[in-house]
Length: 324
Image: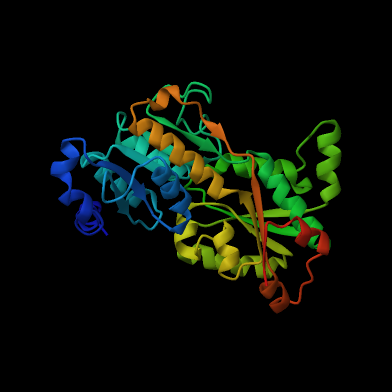
């Protein structure tokens, strides 16, 4: 789909309510929040704003735009939000936040669950963002090693793992580097206890790339060919659109085996607080980037049974959610 056609399509279908409220918003009675790729995960964000007395249909409107997660559509959606304009753009994940940043340098942007906002160029520092972007980060680089450790605890016999990532998403480059450091296959020189701890995992990791649906299918086929014990899928907007948010808890609810990552409800809650503060006049440059340190582990026992796998009781006891 051409960019112009996409812009016309989403502007004509997804923003009917906010466009009808333009006259009211111009007088300050209604505030508008732009969201790219809305989903039920945003419920804690909306609930937090309701608690701050921002009620949809009264003094608040959401502009929800849907994309396929590709960079072209993310940029087009962000451009629509900037052109309307909205009062705040709330963006989940680095690619959406970067698209919003490319679209506007003046509209406040609240970024949610970003891996490294400084490396991504979203802020100049965590304490002093310095521009029109603030928000919260996920657990940090240790999350990759944690995923490998959980995998090893759950299935000690899995000594070869494949990791699927999207090379078109620069935000995942750091995660890939963390994975290389965590996997003895790459012979990264580490020091002291870190080297010992990671060597103890004894996991060899094969990195697979995918930027299209065909390449995703090919990566799954390659995993079978290599006889890997498990496949770890990196968080990415395009992967989300293709495989039902499989890098998050939603993947497990849809039939995936396990997921581990930041507690998204907490991240959305924090973003709702910051959005409310911005709507009251505070500037993103003055709001330090927050770090969500709460992890969330989900396990689907139905899937484990279908695969003939037994998940150790220790892993189940540590899980935040077990789907039976």
